[in-house]
Image (cartoon, rainbow, N blue to C red; front, side):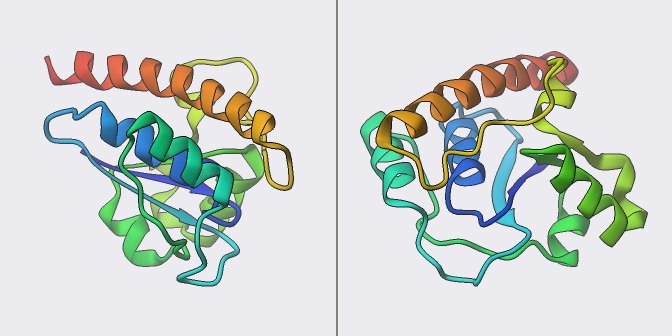
Length: 147
């Protein structure tokens, strides 16, 4: 199962989600992240990097632009917001059936993950905690599907 997490700049939320899921070491699950509006190679945010390092989560240190190759590679594309989801569904109509918000896929009633961009370290911690909870639900769901 190939999973790609998407956010706006691939500097805050999607690298956090990628690192959290990678840390769960689920057999047969490959993870990457990308952004919809990003300059390739831009470093992830300092606060995201600090949080990932502090938790011992693996991470990709630089941002990537989401591409058609990502859409083709992924079995599941999980976005941080409804707007991200809708943008990808419009851009890559042939892959629309595998694009969901993370929270939509996990069954949460609120579909958007809080954006910490420009916020304090504490705001990033809140986003990390929100994502950890969602990724735990996602991991359980993936494990159930494998059995």
